[in-house]
Image (cartoon, rainbow, N blue to C red):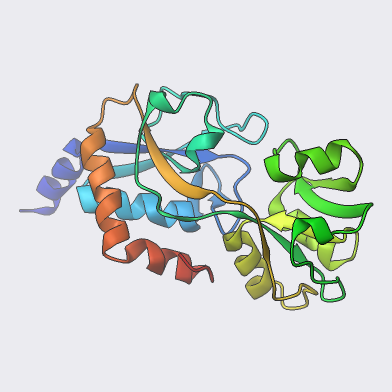
Length: 239
């Protein structure tokens, strides 16, 4: 097949429209102009498209209170979600859990190491992300036993913790691993404590015209063959 034939065949391939948050930063995704050029979600979407032989396009969405709109009719795939975060999970066809994204409490090198959340002293400042919900900690925030120290992102929460502007922070394992690898002068301790279990899933909106079974089968294969673990390792994180 000549060059022109290959180009025509590529144009005829289905397009996978991947939902991408405008607030993404590494390790999840890095924007360059109007597209995502690297990151865990970028590499995962690229691997799915390659597995299917489809073209890939990122659709930039503005997050609402930290999440995308309930259903976006211009996308075929949303990743980085736990089913419990979505108001109506039935509006999507879901992948299996792809990797652990549980919220974990992390500390400064000088912070006491708690064995449980109950060991946190009253008045401790906990680094959190603005508008995010933390069910396990909510009662403690509401009664004033713990204080929210909001940031715009998990990376910013870790930066504040490293400068002792908070006592602890709550982040995902992937962001914690990325920050400790990329910020050479960080002051974070090496321990973490489970706060709230969650797992990363991808969902195909019911409004998508694409074959959801094919997309989900590709994700399952990527997980089973270890490709997702390799993607995570590329950014310093474990599966």
